[in-house]
Length: 294
Ligand SMILES: [Zn+2]
Image 1 (cartoon, rainbow, N blue to C red):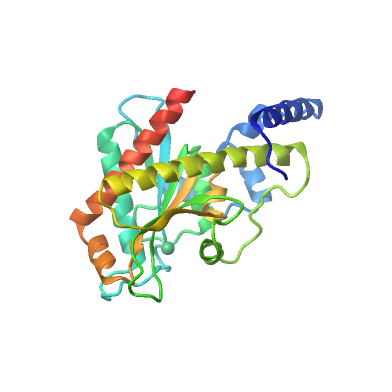
Image 2: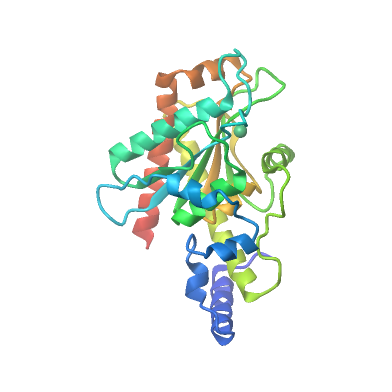
């Protein structure tokens, strides 16, 4: 579909909403992300049998004030899937991502400005679709999936922020997203050309714009906190785990485990604290700005 300006999109949404009423559906219900019926999710192929248990296991930490937005932090890999090995041979990606996710959760909980939850708080195997479904079920306002990179070139280093998009920013990002997405069904969950597809498409466009806004903010905060960044640190591609969250979402690659300096930094709690501060500052600022806009 060609790009639409705001007015065109608004009139399309209005037209679409009227059409929805005419066919006896509720546009309101369609827009309640995270509140879809299980049958609906099963039909969309996005749910696995262990999802209800995985959702029940998630603990949402409340903010100091009720009604604050929710951020879901996803520690990449886990359980049977170790992720990338560290160059020292003493650590694997799933351990680094869980340490970062827990430290970020604790910092956000301490701040009390947002609600926060982790997709996993232990060494467990979780499918990509389950991670996304947890975020969707909880009705998350922001989804941050944490990973660490690996590359054949041992000198490659620095953090990268990927925001969700239909088009990749570069060939590397496209290859990376394809590898992350693995095998599985098509990413588009609504197959026909119905009004419902149109509404979902428009919602996805808003999510992409807000994902890119958050990614930009995270790059700025990271640079301000002395975090090592890759050249052109904000990239974008069609990540399955991000699209499935149905919320603004980024995938944060915290650094290269194939690089000795990055690996040492990711193993050090003091060095990780810089990353955690940058992430927490960016999350709190993004959600505060969005609240103020409403
Ligand atoms: Zn990873």
